[in-house]
Image (tube, rainbow, N blue to C red; front, side):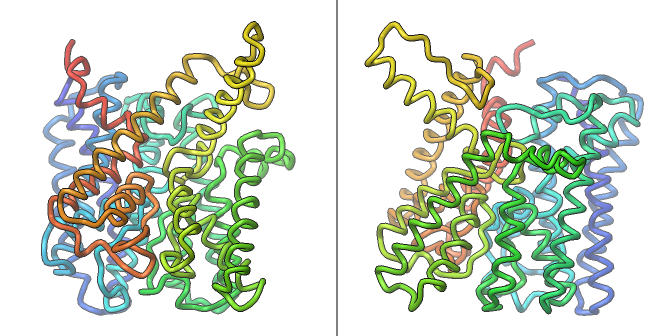
Length: 482
């Protein structure tokens, strides 16, 4: 491991991360609510550290190896989480620096789990930074860096493999830097479209931008204490539903559709499964809400179900209802949906739709082989046969994901949390969902979690956002051997 070279790369990433703080600084200066000095100081500290690393190790110029790629991605996200907490710390938003890091990591990993007890009391600059961390983390700080690293003589494919969500990294264009720029271009375009749609409905520019950032990142940080529910607007509900569904789709598909391939969605087997699952659970939950008289009308039941299903499956975490007060069957259903996630190549977290789809396909194939022992039944995704090594990787991921969920839930229970809160807090953070059940329900927050518990959940958020392997591989002894 060439730590001098790694320090230089991290310095560049930190330098550009610091530049992003200039945007909320401008917002803070416009509103003049006293948070500009805190954000300005955070910018100076962050850019100074980044510049120092660049200058000290400026002669280092190498190609990134796979091992170094994993280390850089993990270190960059942790480093961004720490420095991203500085605006909260310098403005005394939270009583401890742990809370500052928790809120920052929650934003950057697009989890949306908050320790803020009163969101609406915070100044605009702080709230904008909170939303911006979502947006930056959505497509990935590292992915943005890939477009710049080639200019420094540093290859980026290893970072791309470690960062892009899903079992495989879908290169749209031959050069990874061009892929990064293309994905960011699509990301910006759809974000701007949502901002316009929200403003057309009467939302002011600040709330529209913050909610668009949170939607496209599948994050869920709102500028309101009651999230989207506070607006009580059918128009806002369905605009955000539409863009949550877009955010949960592979961005490579969006690119192909924008290039004129209008049938790209329907040719993709993962998209069909994703759309079918959304429709199925929306109908099931709508019927359950209506027939249990949870809401007074069929339309109101559909409106709540149509919002809460995509917000949980895509791991966005916005709320228009306190689903923790729904009938027990639906509470369990919502907990299960936290393990699904968006499509591969989307900004969503959790297990991912394609993994669920392939695991189910292989399970049915195994049942078929019990009846026909001599049959050769390959696992297919559409017309493509999935190699055995990919299926092994998916099974390993799923088992490791569940193992970490169980271990972390046990730790949270040992810290004094009740059963529902313990398992829901881990499911909601390792899946990058945000709101859960019990003490961290839709109308609650994570402020009461013990200090050690917050660090456990911070690790869960990072593990979930970086697809488990990127973090866990650092703890394997063989990783550190030459």
